[in-house]
Image (cartoon, rainbow, N blue to C red):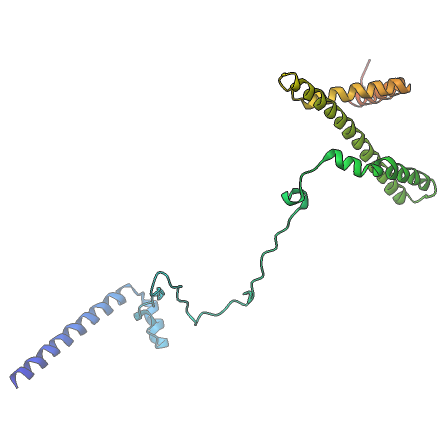
Amino acid sequence: METQYEELATEDSILDSSSEDEEEEIEKELADVTFEELQKARSNGAHAFFQKPKEDKKLKRANKNRPMEASSKKPVSAFREAIQAPKKVVRDPRFESLCGTLDPEGFRKRYNFLYENDLPAERQALKKELKKYKDPKRISEIEEHISWIDKQMKSDSRKNIDTQILARHKKKEREAAKEGKRPFYIKKSEIRKQRLFEKYNNLKSSGKLEAFVEKRRRRNAAKDHRYMPYRRSGDVE
């Protein structure tokens, strides 16, 4: 019997101490709460400020090799992809190693008919068509297309001359290498000089050199005249 009384006494003392601790905690919490919040809580009958905030439960894995546990209570996003399609990979055949490397000489031989026959014929047809139309919009479109054809033909002729210059240089260097000489790699500036020299010789042989020089002189004069300062009307001589 005495032991039972002692156990009950110890339990009562534990309860009293725990209740005292709880009261102290409540007093501490109330000390931080403002008077307005206390009044509002009393009028609403709420006691939310006495409750401790819930801590987010961090999900752990049972084993490092297992996947992370996910809560089933979280809503699934409306934009989630049920079946994830493979990512599209855009490939440019011009830069694919499977398509081989560009052969400029072979390309020039295969598509020579475009620059020798098709483009000049199309240009001539557009020139005739230009005389039929009076609509300024249509005339502008035809003139732009003719200008594009001229640029393509001019670029092709320049590339063709550069290819011929490189071919002659390579042939010359192969012969020099057979004699034991060191190879000389031609620069772009040297190719440009040789191209201009060939153009000069072609114009001279065809008798168009003087007309070309006169045209270039007028163009340069117009360019210089555009940047010259004009005299204002109020200036005194």
